[in-house]
Image 1 (cartoon, chains in turn blue, yellow):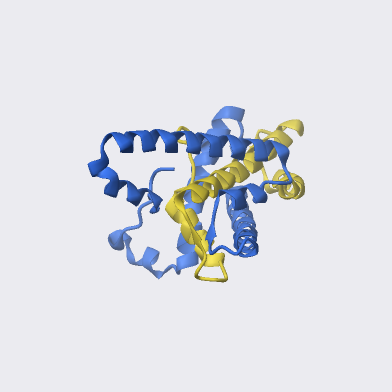
Image 2: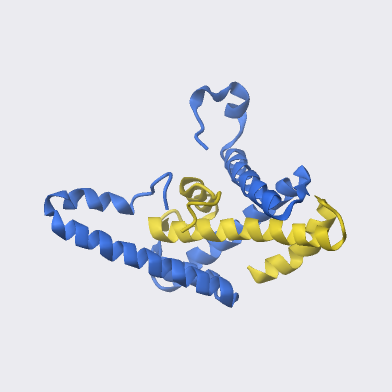
Length: 136
Length: 79
C-alpha cells in the first residue's frame, strides 16, 4: 500500500505504528479474501482486527528473538540462519523455510552467472541487498 | 515463491521489525526479510484457515471471534 502525502489529513494524523497496522490490516484483508473463496466462509471484520493485533505481538517477539540470535552470534545483521531458528520448533515450517532458502540460493547463483556474462553491469548488482519495496 | 498469493510488503515488514528492535545497529537484509514476510503470511493464512475450519466443524459459515479464540492458543504454540 503506497501511502501518499495527499491522502487526506485524517491519514496524516495517525502515528507511525498505527499506519503500519493499517498497512498490515490491508494485507490481512487480502489474504482473508483468498481464504473466504477457498473455504466458502465469511469472516467477521472483528477477526481481522484481532488477527492484526496478534500478528503485531507475534512479530514483536520475532524481532526480539532475531536481535538476540544475531547478538549471540556476535553479528549486527540478521541473516537467514537466524530466521531458520525462529521456525525451529515446527518441523513442517522449518522444511518450508529451508526450501525457500534453497530457492533463493538457486536464483542467486543464476544471477551470478548472468553477472559474469556482463561484467560492466556488476555495479548495479550491488543494489540487490537494498530493500526492494515490491518484490521478494 | 509467494508472488501468486496476497502477502505483505517487505518494506512494511522491515518497518514493523525496526519498530521493535532495541538496538538500532541491527539491520535486516533483503533475503532474511523475505523469509520473515513469508512467516507473517503463513501466520495470517494459518490463523484464518484454522478459524474457518473451526466454524465449519460447528456448522457455521460465518466465522466469529469465538471460533478465532478457540484456535489462537494452539496457533501461537505452533509458530
